[in-house]
Length: 409
Image (cartoon, rainbow, N blue to C red):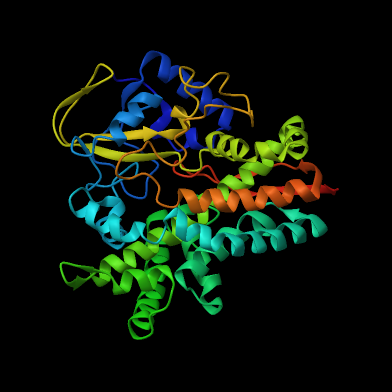
């Protein structure tokens, strides 16, 4: 079904989240898979329209059928310029069997066992970050949310302290390129994103060369020394994986943290409940991820003519899974607009809809969120938040700034 809807416009993604939620609810009810005009809010012009998939079950169906809905033709809303697509061509934009081989190697760096070995360090760093934030107050992003994921992914990949500021700015530039506040100095979004990607590739090249000469116990060393059929991973692939880890490892956990603080500030009864019963922390973290939905969408491309929820999709059509909609599907979640830290079950799609591209860093993200909110619940009796400034983006539900006042317990 083709509908007149604003998902293709820039204006839609600057609207309050509640307005977007109402529109997605309408699509789920009347046109759960609907055809939209080419997006005007991308880093490069989109050649053809796209299908918006808005229901939980349909998003899972697309996610779990890579032979029918492939990733190799791009995963974003819109068509990236060839130079940016090439720079970011990690296993995220691969299909089986190539994706299967590369993911098996990379997943060895993110097993729950490996994350568990790192968990004590995460807990120690989280306590330090939260204690400083509670004692001094400040901005939820700069003074709290950005610090732990930046430290964690930098440490796990062996990024030295001298590179971390540039590393973070470039990773943020990749994610925030659509926001005019970031794409400054007269540069268009595509140019800004390309420069950020090139910076990350330069850093990656330096680190890869160092690991070839001096391998260590970090993720990058694991990748540099890995082999496929007796051959090492291609240099371009290594750098692209580094870029993926830099962006995904930093921004999604940062977004969940800042959105979680906002949600608890707006729902003080839920904060009191968590402080009174720390056993609710696991379900609270899942509810934060569901409600925040850090990543708004991912795209696939139909490999053949098919039908989905009554929509006739042609081979080559872009098919976009809107997690922001699926995580509020009324047929799956009771009172989805209610932030409820006791929600059980909570089959959210905050880490993807399953299948071959399920988020590799989910266990690492959960570990960081547990550490942060455990310490915050111990230290903060009340949380008050000022006006949040949101990232202008159709990809990440980010907060740019939000002042927070803590009453320490």
